[in-house]
Amino acid sequence: MSDASSPNDWSDHQARTALRAIFDAAVESADPGAAVLRHLPEKPGGRCVVVGAGKAAVAMAGALDTAWGDVDLSGVVVTRHGQSAPAGRIRVLEAAHPTPDAMSVEAGRQILAAVQGLQSDDLVIALMSGGGSSLMVLPADGMTLADKQAVNRSLLSSGANIVEMNAVRKHLSAIKGGRLALAAVPARVVTLAISDIPGDDPAAIASGPTIADPSTCQEVAEIVARYKIELPGAAAAVLAAGIETPKRLPAQHAVHVIAAPRLALAAAAQAAVTLGLTPLILGDAIEGESRELGTVMAGIARSSRRHRLPVEPPAVLLSGGETTVTIGKGPAGRGGRNTEFLLGLAIAVAGEPGIFALAGDSDGIDGTEDAAGAIITPDTLSRACAAGFNPRACLAAHDSYSLFAGIGDLVRTGPTGTNVNDIRAVLITRGGRQAE
Image 1 (cartoon, rainbow, N blue to C red):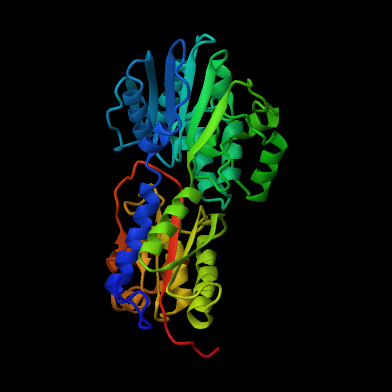
Image 2 (cartoon, rainbow, N blue to C red; image 1 turned 90 degrees about the vertical axis):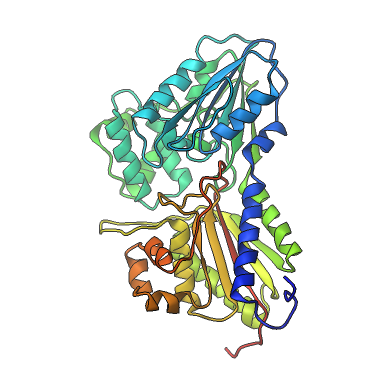
């Protein structure tokens, strides 16, 4: 960026190129295979059984299989449909996300069976990452797959955050919330997790199948009531029975978070510095309604642009975490939390020059769409209107994807094989002070 320190605004092309470089640096820092190799435990005296669930499970498993060619190793992992790849001696299954399917149940059965009958000198390595909650399911006694699917749909449209959703999922599962680890006793269990959870709590990653669960039945009941989550009768009966998840697991169990949003944001910040930008990391665990966060971020960007606070341009505001989109009862268009955040931001910025932004899911899939996210520029709204879109109407209908697709500003990476949650970058260029 030859003119990064110039008093003039950056060109559209320069801003777009910088934002994409920052986003890509964040994603590349969370490479699953490299992260696994940095955290391998001591090799076991007996067998090693590898199990895993999530969007990064295959890359993690493949790296482990290659590194431990001299170990008696087997296992099974599950990833999203269309994202399978060879993982050596470790079997790879595919299932649905974000709503589980029959293969999600089959994956749960095979993974639970894989850890049965082990000895004390055996080792279970659990590879967990984002998406694992729907990719690996095993309904609690009395529940069917249809019940689990209904629960998942209700959770996704409720407005509950990811930690709250996972608390409900754990109490309706025969494998999550520490139950998988309990089934592996007396073998030692080491969990290597890639975090997509605000605060990097391993008990919440993929609903914590190998981690003792601190949430209680009472807390789950409060979550269901707070968000008016509709549950099928069988699920309500399971919760009413009050059967708790494991609160303690054997002391020899260990867990390591090997990649996380905070590390990805640090990599993004370093990339920003090389481009002549001052990075300001606002947090790696930001939650709330996507569109409302867009309004908040617009205010911070305008303050920086006009008054040099909280950071002097040229600068980039970086944040991570997982926001929510509350659909409600009405019809909804297409879009995920990142495109909804960006449309809210664009409307609030209202075409002010010198403010650009990119937001995307690090796994390459925003919600259920085929894009990671999108980019906004100062002329996003004018181009959208010229293309026949009403930006406020699109936001009200949760149809942000259609708008960004219509003006050619979606960011498509394809599945990245990792997941450290959303990466948001708001670029603020230099410009003269503006009157209040």
